[in-house]
Length: 482
Image 1 (cartoon, rainbow, N blue to C red):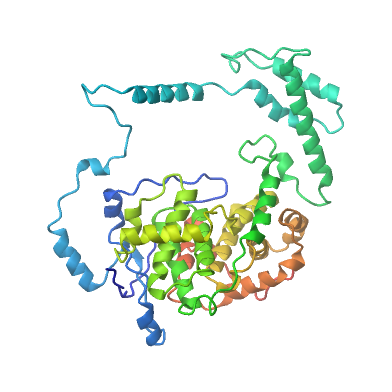
Image 2: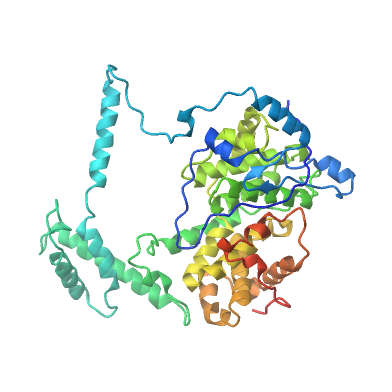
């Protein structure tokens, strides 16, 4: 049987968050074992005793803080834990070691399936050691050919590039033959199609738009050949995944304050587990989609939030935390079977469609195309992350909200620069500035409000030097006119 835990206030001193700049890869997340739990300290207690808080007129709404990654329980629970800890056995040394490849015991005969698996692993390693095919490398470099060059000159340029490849690059491969061979014809066809695509994209750009995709033609991680189609698909899916207002209609037992406290706690979990920011945005989106269709009581609101993070981790994280860690951060307020049952309910509600478009992806795309510095992007991320706690933005499209947050951040950090990137923002976002002017004003008013003492995780997070202390930047006197 689960019980609700009331929380006491505690000073908040968040740990130094990890760097998540634009051009830096996400840090890998280790598997949460017993050693990880010892590092985190005591778990985060249940979100808040909302029923008692409402009866007291929200005067005693408190929630647990984090001090150097450790979460504090109430006094009675601490005493219970101390008595229980004295009887626990010391952790085994093998628990703190990373999980490696399993080796068969001596004298144990491997089965045919096991031997075949070993052969597949060895074959995969051999394939990974093969150098990159030279014709693929040339197909990327020839996309920078001049627009006015004919197809004949393109083929000759490709052939000369292939002939200039050194013997070190073609170790183990034969140089594609010249002439009318099938290999050379395929290479010439690929070159012509890539050049035609670049020419079409460049000629379609309006005046004043930065052609970021053509400049990133040689970057295999930027995928300029597909990126426009990807974000066009994201925008089409936004209309299909729109969240309708649910407080007062579907949800009769919840308030805006309860949702804000839940999102604030989810941000703290994201920082404690060092999850990607895409995971946080996806989890909040799953919560809103679920609350828009299924009625939830205030006692199970935190269960829905923790389960949403659990699902988002499976989708976005390379090494998602195990289920026991989510039970731990909820201080065992819920049983394992409850999280599994709630996971099944959420997945059925969203029809197992977890690949949802989130505003954070649009923001990174706009900032890259406008070639903005990381300080401006971090400020826009701070504004966008604060908007997660605002119920008024639940029904707003993420692509539109990201454009408004970026415009506000540019005006705050680089006054006068927005006019230079205005055409680029409109082109890649698909919105004119008049379509997100009202959102910019709402975001400015959100920043200007007095901070709630119970919702300060995000502000404390972005007040750190790692995030360039963007939360301490002075606000504009009035909302900018775009």
